[in-house]
Length: 210
Ligand SMILES: Cc1cc2nc3c(=O)[nH]c(=O)nc-3n(C[C@H](O)[C@H](O)[C@H](O)COP(=O)(O)O)c2cc1C
Image 1 (cartoon, rainbow, N blue to C red):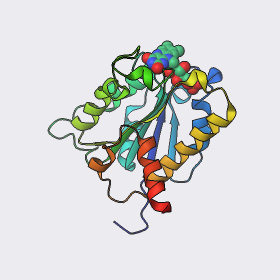
Image 2: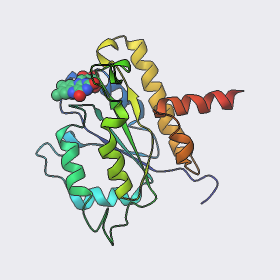
Image 3: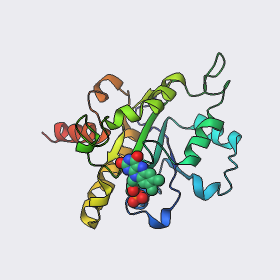
Image 4: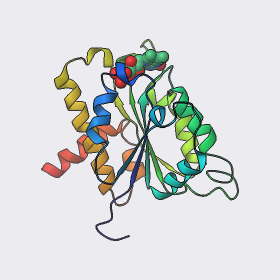
């Protein structure tokens, strides 16, 4: 791989009510027009849910890192993203004996959650950690031979009405995306020492600045 090679990033975005979004709309804005990123808003492209599987598969093949960005809905993703996963990651393409198209690529989830970080603990209202709820995405990536990166998570969205707080997360998200672009060898074990990509990136920036 050439020294100046940049990973190509495909962002698959799903929000069924973007006109009411406070957080995703800003995160989306922070990254969507960045060079080297292909940004796909599923509800905008497929208002009738008729997903163009061939086109989606073609895009997946062309990219190195796939980011699934969405609000956390019922501990999972909005419906159109599940439809996309069901149809696009098909047998013979994404998994199965000859389904090797995604092998070696990476997957990261970028979610916003109404619940606070503390609420996603054993003594909190959601009982399980966010990463426990995301196991289905983690295992889907594994079955496709992909590296599963720690998720980027924005918690407690109802408390984040302050534009300054939202701007901090938008900047961090942009940093995450830019860092993933520049990442040469993805050391999945080091990354996965961090529950969230947020913390991995902040740790990287701290160690670079000393
Ligand atoms: C249908 C629905 C289901 C939701 N399920 C969850 C959930 O399981 N866990 C959680 O923390 N927040 C949940 N929320 C809150 C959303 O995650 C939160 O409103 C969203 O991330 C805010 O982002 P936005 O401003 O871009 O819409 C849910 C909201 C809706 C409308």
